[in-house]
Length: 395
Image (tube, rainbow, N blue to C red; front, side, top):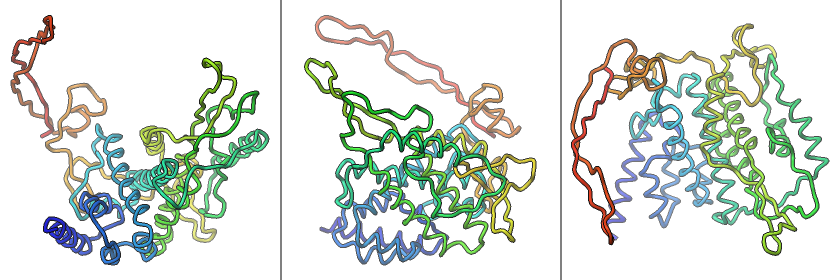
């Protein structure tokens, strides 16, 4: 009991620190919130104290603590994936401190910010959809919808048309593509066959999309005053959700005597989040800088020579800083002290990470097992060897 009260005191102190800073909802990914989700017996006082959340977000915290916990967990997943995707880049999705998370970077709408918005939106949708199928939530379950061959084939045609590049884009939540459009974009839509039927437990993408939209998108009306910033954020949130829908996979299981597969039962599942993160990383590399046409209330490429974009692409307003030097105002921690390798002009190389400042080499020796052999019976004997290790760090 004493330990529980002490944890609560630490957590409430931490919440006060967050409120004193320019915190965003990404703060829910921090370890202190995991302590609350695993030990709290009365979430109402805690949820009410999260003033950096919107009224709707705090209401979800109070009325659906399980969903709120999964959202918190999904944000941790998004940060881990972000750091994996950019582990060899000058910007490595670094976390500043326990109150700012991504620092001032999110205040500038750079390609990195676009990636963060898309990835976190996708992670919430992915985690909720998977939790529904696993039975972790009482509000949802398996997706029982069964796409027909005619609707699937027609939707694949309309789907390809719906994502053609356009010179201008207006964000409208009411014109999102239907779920059937983006289920199987890169592989032929499975056709009904003899012994084939829909079954199993499909991940509930519709419920996952609804939670991601209602929890993330609604805050833009409260925290974002500039119309272009709000439109860009909403666009990138939706691009993340569409990346989840595009990667739905068809999983089948055979039934029959002696593995004869006289009956196949198939359902739709989401892949590991790493696949979605990799796709959004590719979208980041081809993101389009945009401006606002105020007369038409449309977003369009900043320059006519820039790549046209559609609802699946990432967009941004400001150019990225170099991330070479530490600049907290721009959200850059710099690359000084980062470990690098001696390959030439490749991700993670000293020539890329060190920004022409050079690097220093530290040589150390470690002792480890070597020349291990198995001796009957049953023992493994090893020698101890001294190994020389070189590590290089940016100046």
